[in-house]
Length: 184
Image (cartoon, rainbow, N blue to C red; front, side, top):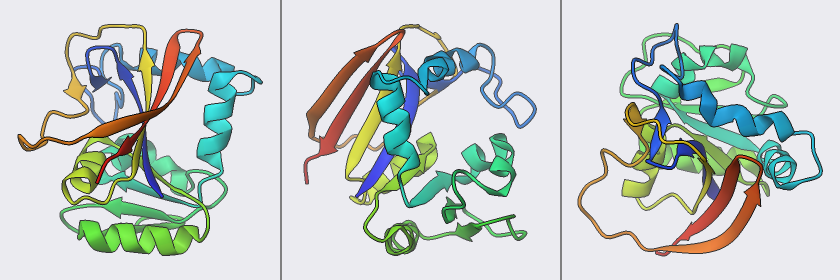
């Protein structure tokens, strides 16, 4: 199963304005991660974090990967990282590999994950997988804030109808964790 994990504002932004490698979440964007203060709790936010860390591979977009400081070569527990990119100009550190084809990226991540799920980070990677029909689920952490500007999660999708089925809703302090299955 390939599942997108994204924190977003109620108005759909995943980063604030003026994001860059030096300011990876843009102006006000780190507000989207306040819910992680409860990551070690027994509550819904802790549950969601534990589930995400049980994944066996990661797919991320190049922009997300670079803005996250390449996760210093290790996202979690040394799982293989497949970075979806338009060009390969260097060798990434740690367990990361650059991949230029979305279908190849998904296949490699699924094979590497074995019987575990694949985590996806980044609006661009999520959109590419969704367009290709390769994204199975979306885990959206909808934060109680309106950022008003920045980068929206679904800005660059084509004008196509995509049916989603809600399979979970977990309200928590300052966030609602929503999981949707992509109806294929």
